Image 1 (cartoon, rainbow, N blue to C red):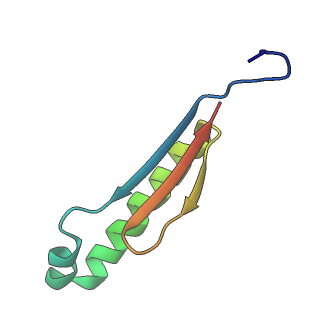
Image 2 (image 1 turned 180 degrees about the horizontal axis):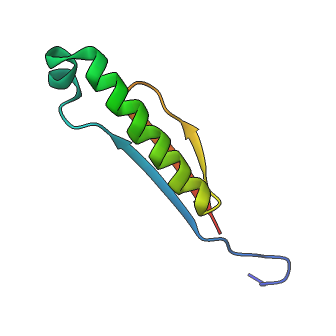
Image 3 (image 1 turned 120 degrees about the vertical axis):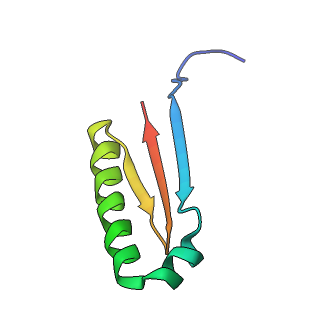
Amino acid sequence: MTQEGFKRKLTAILSADVKGYTRLMGQGEEATIRTLKTCRNAGTKLVQQYRGRVVDSPGNNILTVLIH
């Protein structure tokens, strides 16, 4: 295979969710959702600093991609 016209890119994919989410929701929904939103916003800012993007964030999960 020839290398002409071929460009490699480094890619990182991160999928994370909250450990004990169901338990935390049972202990206090409002506090859990507030904390989740705070963490999600901080994570999004961090990913964007490295030119990445949040692909999806359903429920207590976040899926991000960084391509360099």
